[in-house]
Length: 491
Picture: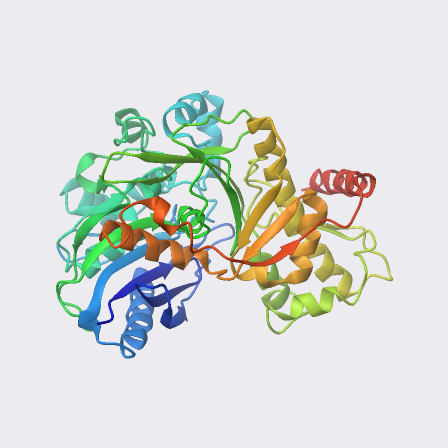
């Protein structure tokens, strides 16, 4: 008799529902996009009801392919730092979610930096003071939205990352919980003692009543209740932030293994095992996952805010391509960008620069420049950002990475992957299953449900689809990296 695992993969631009059987055969999948809201320059918001509608639509479609009573576990993975506000009793949203890309609290972060508060932040949370993270977003909402402020005063306010909101909805409002990988992205969570930190909460006007409890990533969070698209009683047994989920889905379960996910942004994570590694080069220390047996796996992380979103800008902003997939064909029309450089700092620069005020630039244009050169420069710009991340990570580790696992939508772009291998000077390993974020949610749910007894049991699943090797020399690589630094200085 077949048994199934359902993954709900809630990303920045859409929701994917994926059903696999316990032998990891894909049975059904469906993606539904939702609207992005940009009320002011630098502001990015999501409507939680639109996200929930996308969950309803995607799950409704995939469960039609099976007997839904045979779903033995549900796993949730999600965009992480995006923060949500809703009523505890009704689960009604009280405001739009403030998305991880949002930069409205840049001045507040700068103010705290000027008071040397970043030292406390990094020591306790492993993060840096940047509007990317959740805490200043919560503080801003409490100060600027009367309905949210009133709910906080009445202790009816629920605050949480997207996983927490979806869990509340899936369980009929009965559960207000999260897990450590998501909690570690809020700038409120102490990485060592794994508790909400009193100093951080006080600084950002957050109190215990609004925050979720924190459980192991692989554990029973609750059961479905009162849904139109799923029967009651299905256990939710895994929750994990999207980038940590991709690390798990890539089977990077041992210290020193690393992956880069190309989604809306680009996210490079390296497993540091049970060691909480503090970065000397402005990378982030984060929790990868926790288990019910008390084991914690940590990671180092660097993020570039604009990867796939850069291609979306070429499509929707410049209208030089009709679909994202066309960028590879267009960029392949030229052998190089011929000096055109695009630094995709549309919403600031992430690690290791952490400059929220940076803005995108295109340099080196001539009368001979075409849309193909701009497309090629866009792919270069995505890759150059990841070079900055990996070089910082190598300095922290004191050694050079020989290979990097890659996944996500843009990893299917062979030209981008070759450019990335050339600029990094290391091999890129692309797996058969590139949607590893969803696969990680399947693994998380399966481990939480006891289908796999240990994390190690998943290692036999990963299979190589293609390997990209560098084809340029060190001298050319060095010249191109210097050109990147010059272009970046103009942001």
